[in-house]
Length: 101
Ligand SMILES: [Zn+2]
Image (cartoon, rainbow, N blue to C red; front, side, top):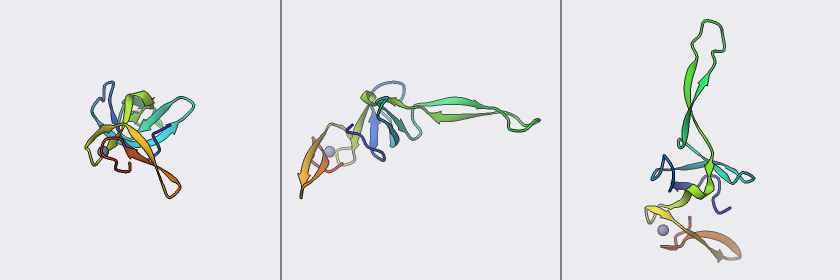
């Protein structure tokens, strides 16, 4: 997978299209990513003790990796990534501007 944990991505499809966020988790088997504060859904939390009120919290839901693209801060847009080897190390670069992403 080209996207790694901690990457900044842009959503290119779905209800949060155009938003950017940071990748919290990669679900390799499901081909999904979990992005901080995006693709939220409301979850009802039951009260822990009697007499307390239940709460509604917003929780990010994993989304398909095909709906996100790496966001290049140099280009300020979603870009395709390429690879370049630097002193034997493979690094990811923005295909547009060549900056490491
Ligand atoms: Zn770029």
